[in-house]
Length: 269
Ligand SMILES: NC(=O)c1ccc[n+]([C@@H]2O[C@H](COP(=O)([O-])OP(=O)(O)OC[C@H]3O[C@@H](n4cnc5c(N)ncnc54)[C@H](O)[C@@H]3O)[C@@H](O)[C@H]2O)c1
Image (cartoon, protein in one colour):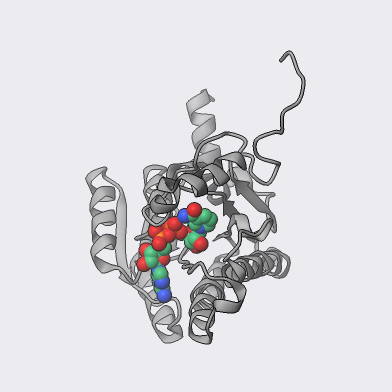
């Protein structure tokens, strides 16, 4: 077998059907486009119809297969209907990427109940409800991979992220439950936790001199992450190459949790 054939056997997503939430977002769309380029048919779900259509167009322009599905992860009935629609269209769901998420940076004491509920409902209950709707289809086929998008805040908290951090720790905990309870159905679940990623939403943070310095000091690779940095690990987790990886968290953070920039020390290397 040639190197190309061997790599294709391990990592190709040809024939796989992948459902995304948050597919119109910077990170979700990058993963969806990357997986489509690796051969997957991608069902793009989000509340932002306009951007969803743009993502689908970009995928189709590269001869990929994609469809758009308007979906609010807080609406249980809609979720069930959308998943029925997707299974009717493609015949099955092989991979679910739970990527929809929001944040509002406020101090612990400043968060009102409405904000608390909104972040909890989208980031945590959304993952719960979408996964409950998808898992039975995976069980039917005795196969599936669930990729939950976590955060830096599962391991080390930034100020002003109390509720967001709690939801992402919850998502990591859900991931472990999914892995433990559904291994008997050959359903794997893993959490991919991006570090400090430069997206449209975080561009103002990266443009802020003090905040960007604060972040860079804490990133060993001394640069922001980009949405494209998250793609490879998601292709791995969706592919056969990760058949024995389940219930774990994989950080894509440029060495942030590891310690970031080292303090000054003597070395000739
Ligand atoms: N940007 C970062 O630095 C960073 C770091 C760590 C983790 N993350 C996580 O990555 C994921 C994607 O973040 P992003 O930076 O691409 O953000 P983004 O805002 O670009 O994307 C989030 C997407 O979720 C969608 N969404 C919001 N509410 C929804 C709902 N009720 N139903 C369905 N879709 C909904 C939005 O329309 C948007 O398209 C999030 O879960 C986020 O917490 C981001």
